[in-house]
View 1 (spheres, rainbow, N blue to C red):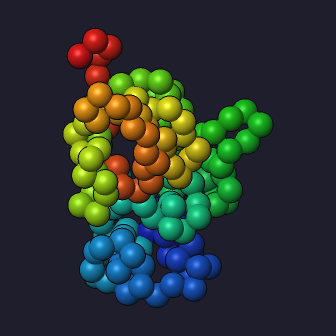
View 2 (cartoon, rainbow, N blue to C red; view 1 turned 60 degrees about the vertical axis):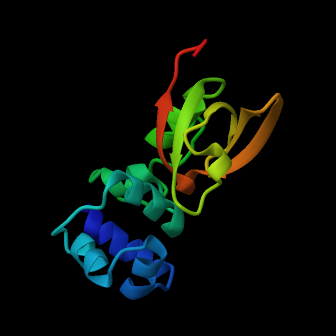
Length: 152
């Protein structure tokens, strides 16, 4: 099954119209229609947001071999979602985050340390003056992460 068919199927299971999904994704209804018709493909950050909204894994949406929405979900072998694996591996690392407009401006392009990650949220620590602050950041608010070397 192709990504478009998977998006349409998952959207219908959530009782969403194309227009409602488009509004949640901040795109036009025509964009959702093109995705579902396999005439266009969502950008990677849109795939992550789609997976979150539709309660399916990124692996399921992106891999034509996965036929079940639970394929690629966490299993006894650990998380299989590439975004989840990346962020779990980044725990304890220094990063700079680019965030969506509605996200916390204190964190925008700040040097942060990833303290915890649970799949939908990430806890980070950063310096604000002489104090160390910590914040929870929704994964959907992160547009990019840049890994920094220690001592920067």
